[in-house]
Image 1 (tube, protein in one colour):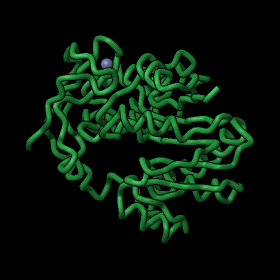
Image 2 (cartoon, helix red, strand yellow):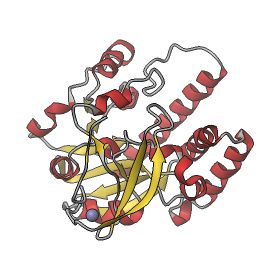
Image 3 (cartoon, helix red, strand yellow):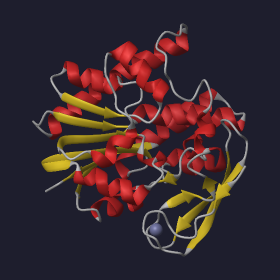
Length: 291
Ligand SMILES: [Zn+2]
């Protein structure tokens, strides 16, 4: 398949980078992709990457988007339990961060987060590029999401702008991030959750680390790269928080790709979480504030 080679870093525009790792698309195409590390800003990015009109083909799998809540079985029960626990945690985080109630979720998926927020009194707007996901959001959660293409025509501002595992997929990183930052109001916060390639589990699994998820993940962030990047757009970094279930989930998936054991996955997930305070957990939530 045709890919685009990037001669400049998608975050800072520098032209000097070095190959960090070569990773297989374990999930779908089995193609190899190179990860390159920018020598200026520490961003790790997938290079070359699919063209914008072909990237959709890499999402074409029944498993990728957890669209349906109607599946039966134990795994699904656990999944639903984890989701409702995670949603409660997200709601208490929102309340702790700001009394403001105007919320924009970018990459809203099937709308579970926004449905919960709406139920808790938030005025919500959600953007989602996938039409099927938008349909599920309406059918299952009664949330009417808008197409992501609306992003650049938004003129209002929000108390909270959230992106749960979305920034690593955004095609035009610099332009979109600038727009996203401009949507945060004077007392507002930006919440960004992304995988952390400097986590304990990432360093343990290397090319098998499931959260590289190439080529769907175009960028691979670490505290060292994402904090200066967002601050350069005009926000102030406040804190980061671990996403503890992700450490287990990503380790399980990585063991699956590696042909290893689930017991081992539990151990690695546990160790990543033990090291969360040092910023070594699998996925992290970063909180940025306007002032
Ligand atoms: Zn860079």
